[in-house]
Length: 212
Image 1: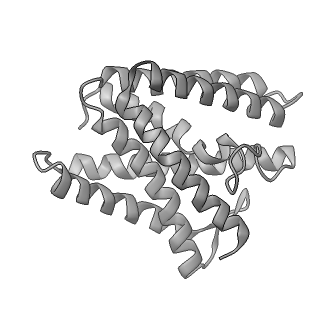
Image 2 (image 1 turned 135 degrees about the horizontal axis):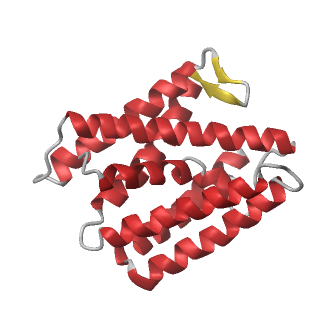
Image 3 (image 1 turned 60 degrees about the vertical axis):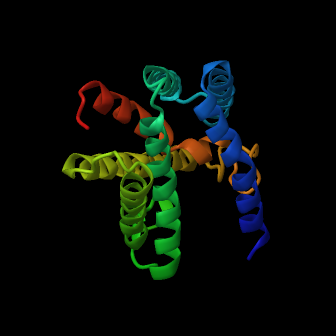
């Protein structure tokens, strides 16, 4: 295990409980967390998009994305499982893509994100679907898993993967490897939440139309 991977694992073990605690507690604790994340994201975007035409549209998107994150959690104040599931899908997509990509390798998916492969893309769908099936069938016993839920997982996973590629594209335009250095082993905050900031606006719309 290389040093970078060790840092990545340690950072995840420290940050994950803090994030989930904030989500579960809600109220000012959650608001404080997303406000800090918003400020860091805006700072990192500003640093990587200096003097670029897409700088302002990027700011607007980040604002709208964090607005949907806040609204989604507040709307579900007494039932936060939908919010948790969206995060689990994004995390599962990242881990599934990483594991399958390293195990099976194969053709590259995109020149904008050279580490991504088609096998990784498949893993990024398989793992979150498996996680949600386990969650719905064995943890949330009363919940009903239907075809809409499977479609939902696929849509959120796909959006999360596209978000990852889009941020990678802008990093290549800026000729940088990471959006920052705030999280050891991960880089910047946008490196960690790139998929989520795209997945949450879609999940908010899906929740509004009562698709699931």
